[in-house]
Length: 410
Ligand code: NI
Image (tube, rainbow, N blue to C red; front, side, top):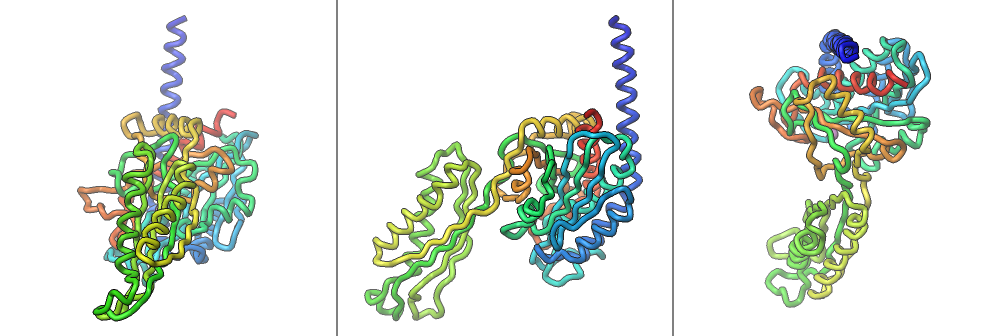
């Protein structure tokens, strides 16, 4: 009996190895194209909600693979459906496609041709990776039970974001689970990180106008100095995180803009502040504007000034579903080995992948794309940001592996 089990296990093991090297070969076959697509996209970046040529490129490339039902859910997004040979679950895979208003400082020959616009977050790579996965999987239709829905999303970088628009257009109808990934410069290429639960925070924003009374800088007693009051407001807002909230619940309050004044001898009547609040916990998120306004009101009143306060909730936090993350982790470990797949640390950055996760359980994971030895160290949103292109094949393999894992045994 034991011998039979051992034999079966061995057979299974060999079979699995063949399957995995199969995927390896398939990925090798598309790797060069994926790099070419990424470079084309990098050279031709487009801002959020303006991804016209990008979407057309993705649409045409997907059409050329054959076997996919390709459509345009919104003006600048693309969806491709791959219906497997047998019925089963529907798995959505998502990539974002938009660039940022940054002037690129990289000097390689595929640097941005669009002045002031740059793929400085890796979304060019995400799009190329998902195209690569779509090409491989479209040749495996017979093996799949269920449906793969490839979501090429516009406008991740600009609130209210493209994800919600795609959801409103119906792309998540009948989807059972959703998976997305981000190339991650903070992690070395060759590593992948997953995490159940909190991964990315809710990025909310605020604006404050401090209303004082302007006048001559030599006669402060006849003014209400909006700059001095504004400075007190900034300082006191930092007491929220340090003194008023649970230290075990993550929160960030950052004032990022402080604008006021025109000359060295004029006290300005008003100053404008803007900034961001980041949280995971829904209660803390709700409390944030209340705590802020209490401080703004108290400080301005204490100095005889007035205020206006505006607060806007941004994307929901990315909270990964336990079961989907487990499936994802299993398939990645099967494809890459135990040591490659690490636990991800949560970040206070935001992501509108959360809009898809509200429609179906999902998991978002990180693909290492930095490489100190090649000098690829610039952080995301930096004018010299780039990715190690070896990460692209890893991303393709990851999406193919998880799709086969989820849709092969329905
Ligand atoms: Ni990004």
